[in-house]
Length: 432
View (cartoon, one colour):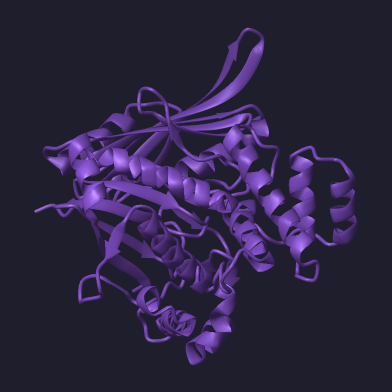
């Protein structure tokens, strides 16, 4: 359930001949990619070329709350453009449509008239009527909010994620987690009655690169991406710079908006920008405390093999090393996980693991019906440096993970055990 577009275009003869001569659509996708990056410099877009259903495809991330805009060659000189725009809002939808029209002019594309398969669901691409976009977005968010009250979306334990990544779960006392912060039941009920109440859900409501656009794109990253500590790599530093620069641009355009002064001041401190800008922001923050940021609390992260683990939000993203071990850091703490799958008599394999643990001494054990894990904690030393290492073996029905947690303070022992016990295997397969 979303609002978006799926459009098809034909390459006009000149560009089609060019494509045939080069024998690969990748060359033309490269040209399109360069044009988009140049045209969207203020958006700080990111792109890459890959494949979708074996078709060469350009993937474009134009907003931090957006899914990728996908431009694919589908054969016979035809190209498609697809995007889900309801995660961001009307302003984004109109920007994408207007950009595709300009792209068509530049690369001599002939966009096809709408039909049942290829169309802009708001009609804006072909009509140019912005009111259709606003109406469809209001209708969409009203329908989403209504799902909380008809039994479709219901979770008595966790907040429901709306337009959020599926591989990260945030811990917050709310009915819903959204790109611009948590929403309570009262907000959902009012929005289910009147979609206009839900306009603050969208990160890009009004068209154009106005102050609201720059402010809200910063808020998306403040809520979901900031680790609230000094950055430890270029990616984290770039995220903080993106936010600080976006807020500064927004303020120059319109100083009357509600800015996240405490969070802005904190981010400038992490960037070591202790200058007049920081003093100005800090003075506006006054005695207010930061309240934004899902990663001020624990996050639950999906790992390869569909394992899940809960770590402090200050941890960086899990990344693979050259041996496909996945690791995340919150210096000096580290978490490493490597997962495997196996086949055979799965209940018997699990039982053998239980029997093996009974012969081990002084180990920590964590068991459920279809899962058994054991761990040991040892103090290590090397070249005058001491640390603790929790090493564990974790086995479910048909899968296993090796998890190692590194910490340096003895008082972090309970924390390490808690993180290890949070490791969850994939859903167990049915066993006949």
